Length: 140
Image 1 (tube, rainbow, N blue to C red):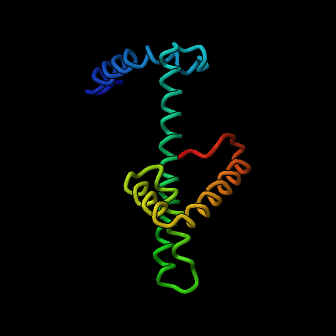
Image 2: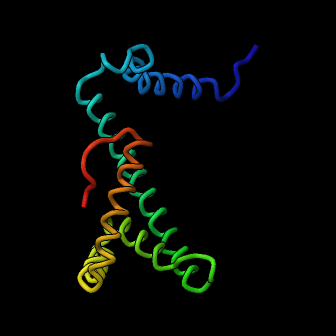
């Protein structure tokens, strides 16, 4: 019974792959806490980075959605466009400098809007705190 022309090549590749995989085999049998502290810190950093990125994407999506609703509200008689625009600017002001500047100009120009905006921001923060069980003042 002959083994074929590629049996020696298969054997050599199998040996090379086993040599490459052998140093990593401890990962399959060890719990994460028993790994080297550098590996554990990298995993924790990656998880923290992923959460921060997901939070930033969520903030951007919600903020831009409110801006789009605000633009639609300026055209449609059903929605209050200025309210949605102010909410969207408030949300986006944490991520974009231009939104923060525009919101500051609006606050300086219309002080009555500023008082309502502060009340709305506080109410929204309280609601988010209840829903997500977070504490502390709203960030600016």
